[in-house]
Length: 334
Image (cartoon, rainbow, N blue to C red):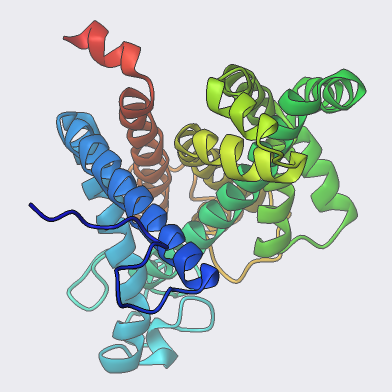
C-alpha cells in the first residue's frame, strides 16, 4: 500500500521542494476548493430560483427588454434610415399627419414631432438598463461596505452611519431629486450616481448591517482574529463575501427605484437626456395628447407599459431571489 506524501514533503532520492512552491500549491488547492463550493452554491440557488414561476417569468421579461436594447443599434445600422428613424432628429417624411397612427413602416406610429415611436422605445431601453444597473452597483458597493464596517467596529462609527441612514430615509427621495435636478444639470450618469449614493447610505445599509452583525459572531470570524488577521482582511475577506447574496437581492430593488425615478424626472423635463421613456410621455403631455383618451394611445401606452413591466420584472425577480437568500421562506413554502 502506497501513501501520497503531504505537500512540501520529499520522497527518498528526490530533491526537496522550495517552501514557496509548497505554499503556492496549497493556495491553489484552497482556491479550487472555494471555486467548487461557490459553483455548488450557485447551482443550488439557481435550481431554487427556477422553482419560482414568477421569478422565471420576470427573468424572461428582463431578457426581452435586453434584446430590445441590443436590437436598436443593429436596426439603425442595417435596416432603418437615420433620417427617418433616429429617435431624436428623425422625421417620418412618408406621413402627412403627425402624430401618425401605427402602420407597416411605423408599427407604433409617430410622435407629435414626426419621430418613430418604436425607435424611441428601443433606444430608451438601453438607457434604462445603464441607469438601473449603474445605480444598483453603486448602492451595493457602498451599502455592503458601510454595513460591514458599522457592524464590525460598532461604537461611534456605527452610530454615525446609522444616523446618516435615518436622515436619508426621512428625506423624500423624489422631492430631493427634483431639487437637485433644478440646481444642477443632471444627466444619466450623475442621476445613477446620486440614486446609488442615497440608496447605499440609506435603508440598504441598515439591512446589510443587521446581517453583518450575525456574521460577526460566527466562530470563523473569531478564528481569523486569533490567527492574526487584520481588520481589513476580516471585513473584506470574511464578512463582505457573506453579505453579497443579500446585496444582490437589494440590487434588484434598486434597479426598480432608479428606473421609476428617471421616468418621473424626465416627465417633468428636469433631466438632460437624449431620449427616455419619461421623455416620450413628456412629449405627449406637452403636445396635449396625454389626457386625450385612447385616440392617441401609441404616444403613452408603449412607454408607460415598458416602465411598468421592466420595474415589475426586476422587483419580482428580487422577490424570487429572496427565497434563495432566506432559507426560512423555503421552509415556509414547503
